[in-house]
Image 1 (cartoon, rainbow, N blue to C red):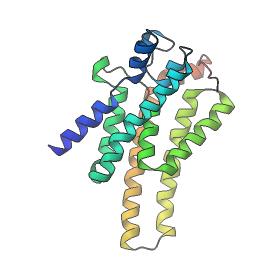
Image 2 (cartoon, rainbow, N blue to C red; image 1 turned 180 degrees about the horizontal axis):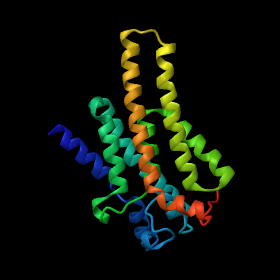
Image 3 (cartoon, rainbow, N blue to C red; image 1 turned 90 degrees about the horizontal axis):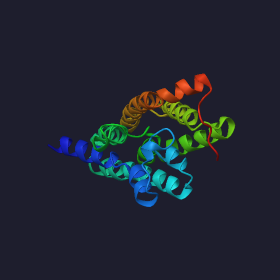
Length: 210
């Protein structure tokens, strides 16, 4: 029952479509009829209202940070299940016939709750790639890949750096679980950006202004 409750609450939190709610309330627009039709912050910015766009980004991050951080401290053994549920909620919200956002802001929120270092790495990588290529989709996918690779390398390095004590074994186990869930998130982000990948290949992907 506890597991089902955590999955349900995490999913429902992640499924709140802030992009749709904010654009309808403040701009009297349906974000699904703007730009790519996506409910995420990048598409909300295409309405021309940066305040609403950045507010969407903030709320999409917070809706992930809140439940995952709570579960991390109260039910640490279920934190990765909660993280995945939040992400799936954003990408496949029941309220919008399972057609949601691409999950990048929600993924960042999950990272912030799981690891400040990895979340900073994600943001830094995203910004650098965006400044170079000006593609939000490419930046998101590359940043997610970078986070996974760094987490995996850290897992490999831990047995060498740390002595084989009980504490180090626990650290390695946690690191291994984190690397696995980050790999799943990377695959999901690739999936949600499949259309963008096609656009990048065809050179029709829309560039962003930073």
